Image 1 (cartoon, helix red, strand yellow):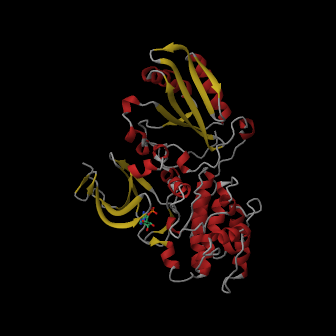
Image 2 (cartoon, helix red, strand yellow; image 1 turned 180 degrees about the vertical axis):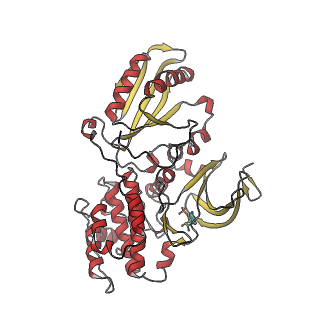
Image 3 (cartoon, rainbow, N blue to C red; image 1 turned 90 degrees about the vertical axis):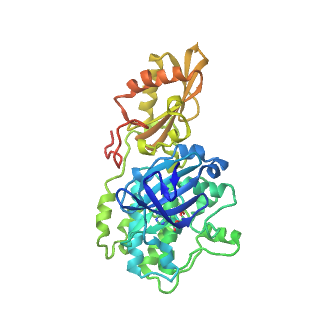
Length: 439
Ligand code: AMP
């Protein structure tokens, strides 16, 4: 079976329990072949399916692989059995950053170093259209060299669901790190909400305690909404100025990451982080074609979970269904949505299917003639990852699976061949990062 004694998949020797979350237990483990230390996160499939997360897990991208960065915890591998999902993660030997703060505030220079690393990691992900939305102390770990590793960039949907069912929350049971606009559920920009959380984290590093705290939850919401907080005497004026700009309750006026990077307090005494900065910058994907894509409204607040795995090694679909009966396919394309739509319309004609636009981002392909098991009907859903990088999910909604597969293999695959970047589950492994070019 999967675990023989304490050996997982004949590959990892499991050791002590490192920590425990709502859906997961995390163990230390050693790769038997390479000797490398890893952390194995074990997720109970039944638990996640009970709260309706299986679909999201099936669609989960190996975002940590996609966004490989020195300050983001790397996801090496995903494995599964009937009842469990296992993530092999980079092992963060230094444990949680906030265990350090538990002993009191950090020195300004140390706080700045961690803040640099946090901002670099978050900026890098944002440039790839990925928002964390649940940045909080438990997600900030340290490696053996005291470098920050942000974890759970791919798993923030799990945290989301904790909020939805109302039972589970952050460990302290408060929305201490959540931006005001997220609390009021007004609809928000993932990047601005992440910047707010980074501000709360910086405050905690410098002050040694939370900026917004009240035993009464309503009162706490009020404080967050007005950004009502005080500085302890030891926080220096320059740091105060920056924090005031980050913890602006108005997301429109809140400082952006590029401006944070220009801030004088931020820039002070930067040494090795400059390397990180270099690596993380220049990565922004810009769009010139977005205006013409207005017909497809942007899916609201995509997070890592809304994105499909680009790497076959992380294709969880196979964990849940027989490969020969695949009724859905996913692929990614470096083109604006309008180009993808015209392409699909063109292919539709070729395979004799009517193509109609339904909800924003959803195309329906319906066969002109009835097939063996009724009219073949296929949904093609387009998700925006960045304005010029899209993931398309194709799913049979009616008709015969073999006929569907024929359309995929003989219509879609050849038809999209010249614009497609990656079919999920194809043999060739895509390495690391997304290509840097805009088409
Ligand atoms: P999580 O469910 O991801 O919040 O993990 C629960 C706890 O396990 C964390 O708060 C950490 O203390 C520990 N942990 C998680 N991932 C790792 C890792 N990669 N390396 C070391 N400890 C970890």
